[in-house]
Amino acid sequence: MTKKEIQLTIGIPTAGRTEKLISCISSIHNNYSSKNIKIIIINNVIKDVPDSIKLLDNVQIIKPQKTLSPAASRKLIGDNTETTYLLYIDEDMTVSPNSVNRLLDFMNNNRDISVASGVLIEDKREFPIAYHFGFGKKRDTIGVWKEPIYKCMLVSADLDYYQTDFAHPPFILRTSILKNVSFDSNFNWGTELFDFFLQCYHKRIKTAALADVVFYHHPGVYHDETFKTKNLDNNRLGKQYFKQKWGFEIVPPVSYRFSDILRMRIKTKFDKIINKII
Image (cartoon, rainbow, N blue to C red):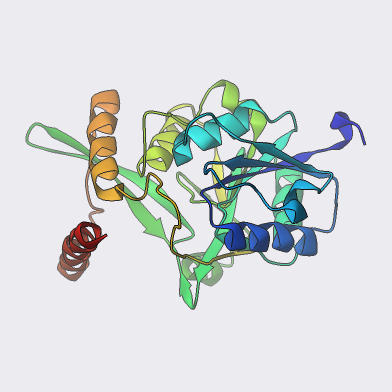
């Protein structure tokens, strides 16, 4: 099979959760009808990738000399992708039947769209399917935020897809846009997706969300030290760097209720306590 025949690369940053990676790879092979793909895995831990994955013909494993952040891992995947399309998916996610095929068909049939995503489900909870950016100013501070869009909004409006500003993984993109936008390796944990899609927004790169494309999230404990180990500090530093880079401060959506903000603050305090225990 020549490189020209391969249309899709699937990029997976991994951080040592072998069982999650195996499930992710298995779901791709079991639910994507074509084997005409290339899979790039960024192995960010000392432990080796299991033979059941290494021996697959269409898998390329890149072992960096040092542990990379999610942003740096996604950038490295993009730098090593030669196909027309690239699907980013995390190691703790799986695909459903026809989800990858549906995204690929959608991109082939909608040339004006450069990024597309679907619904992400964790247990019985659905994440927002996408977001719009909001901008505002309070005294001397320019704020930017994400207004969530939910699947039910698309379904009730009987929309095949919805054009939006921001999507979370898994999402597919045309690799041609990576000449104009890229993941910024200065972000260690968090905010890198905000930065990436704000680049797309300013470059007028169109993003769409599809209500009939489903992926699953299976969170679990990290067995090795990763950038998530100090996620609160890394996220805080990421927001500081974001403000220096863009001149905007990331703020909560205007649609947040008081109860949402209170719950978020309680969760932040709880995370700090857990991190001290760890």
